[in-house]
Amino acid sequence: AQTVTQSQPEMSVQEAETVTLSCTYDTSESDYYLFWYKQPPSRQMILVIRQEAYKQQNATENRFSVNFQKAAKSFSLKISDSQLGDAAMYFCAYRRRETSYDKVIFGPGTSLSVIP
Amino acid sequence: NAGVTQTPKFQVLKTGQSMTLQCAQDMNHEYMSWYRQDPGMGLRLIHYSVGAGITDQGEVPNGYNVSRSTTEDFPLRLLSAAPSQTSVYFCASSYRSQWGSNIQYFGAGTRLSVL
Image 1 (spheres, rainbow over the protein chains, first blue to last red):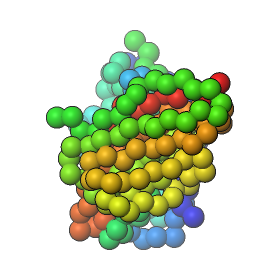
Image 2 (cartoon, rainbow over the protein chains, first blue to last red):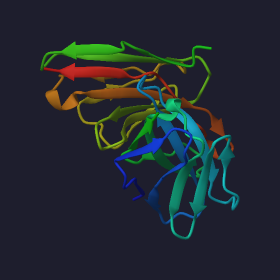
Image 3 (cartoon, helix red, strand yellow):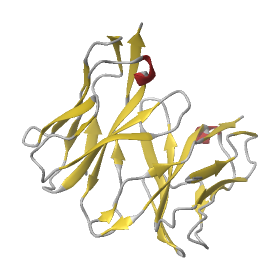
Image 4 (tube, chains in turn brown, red):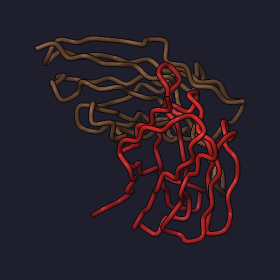
């Protein structure tokens, strides 16, 4: 069974600095998707970034980028120039690339604080 | 753009009471899912649906029922609430691409307390 692990329950970063959130996963599949979701205090789940396993290039969305290491089954999220609005819970998630519905497996989350 | 709408936002129940959490989406998505979120455990899948009339169990289905009579609506029913069901519940929908389900869109969540 697939699992997703986030080993950092809590992290903090100074405003304008860079922080990296870790995520590892376990799967025997070769083709899949990986996601980072952000959950601010409003509780809304917001997709931050998505990576397709068959793509070697790391995904980037503005200040958010990932370091995808397929062989190591690692998928870390880097937030550059951190802003107060980045304070939230961040969830790493995995889904197989199937032709029908397949379940998204979520990690336990990392709570990020941004210090002014 | 309504997206995924969940009601109510907050609910307090007594043990043994029943209730229905509502979820509606206006994006014509085939796939809909219910998750519960508990501290330190991320989101766990309760039930999901791949289309009207088709539902299946997720990781933690016990104590919950679902139905999908229309594409838009996917209610979650608690038959006899228990304190262990105190949680935050999220509904999500996604569209079917040629590679299966795609990005999930989440509702704002329902915070449920069972006393």
